[in-house]
Length: 205
Image 1 (spheres, rainbow, N blue to C red):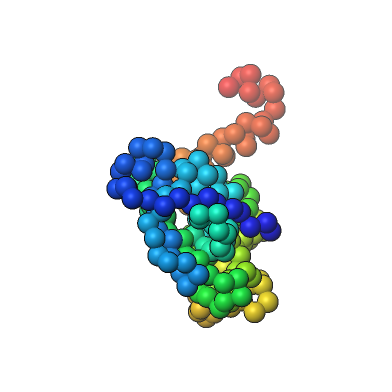
Image 2: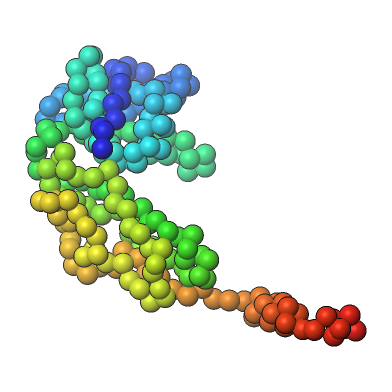
């Protein structure tokens, strides 16, 4: 996967002023760079997170110098959902790091169709390995899951040499049968009987 690039600008203004100018305030830090207050173009960050996730790997460009790093943390407005702040950690691609990676469950539409519910217990997991090998997200396909199935850490395929901080059989998600309302059941029964009833009987009804 191609690593996204993000231009970073030095910041000497307060956060609220930066946001008024359609930028997102943040901090960049790590062994490769001196910790600094920075800002990012809002449209660039929104596109990056939409395409690569909230913990994405990226190449940051600060004062024409490129560095490899991760989105380490984000903060959003609880009412609007707008991105308010973002931290980026700069690392060497071959360094061993620990990083939180989001879990994305695919195929939930199939569960809904089969009247099943996915109860999610974890939205991300902590991975350890070389920075360049840690994925942006972990996708888990649940489209063929059945009631009672449990998604465990051991069910996830990780890149070679990348491990999870806790590989115990911790349930990440559980599939359960949806409770069907009695009124819905009666409606289904009536519709089923109506479909099978003779036309004459329906006319006389």
